[in-house]
Length: 342
Ligand code: MG
Image (cartoon, rainbow, N blue to C red; front, side):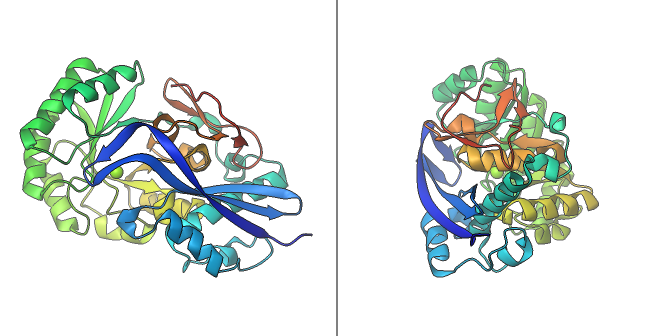
């Protein structure tokens, strides 16, 4: 039995379009690829650290240069994935260990988790903030993809409402919106009141995180269901949101990987929240890891592979928006590019 070893490397992924949300804009995604080796096998992992929560690709790589792995047995996940490892760093290691265990057992991760791969949901395709002409071009590129998520939360209130009206006039599919903390509570009530006539499925994080009482205020005045993202990082955040929102967005990077996401999903079910599974701008490794959990959730927003180009990995594909899981052992991710479809 060989020792368990880890290497990390930074991955720069160019984006199909510059990606703009209420907090800022980016042209490339910067993630960290994890490779764990043990017993002649290699497990692949990835994390896409979020500056909003104080982690970066460099901070993750530096963490593992300073902190050796806490054991040699990849099955001892509780030891190796200690809660004091920062969440984004823990996420990359957690995914790599799950991939390694799946390869050692010769089973896809969804089987180890007890899940039916035919029960994956549709995913939304995210459209960042842009001028109306660019937004419409992106909507036309969606073709007949059945669900979109539109980023709002910056610019004049009237312009945001006009943008949704324009999109609704051209797009018959399901529309979700995400304000990324960009509105005040009163502004959220006003905008959501106007947007209700455009048949919006839900609104993600209308106001800055940390104010559950204001979320409740918005929810009580909105016909559009309210879902948190920045307010719901881990399972421990959920009890404070009880009665204040309709659903929560789970992301592996926020919550420390597959184990953290499972804890969060089961806590959310106990509290009767609807559950969305999200991603960052990332490669197929991280999106495929999240997708293996997707039979457990109500809504998926796992569109990383649509947003990047030159992804060096292949994993999930899509059939008219429905996630199709690979059936190789572990994550089923392979090195090499392929077309992900729509
Ligand atoms: Mg969000």
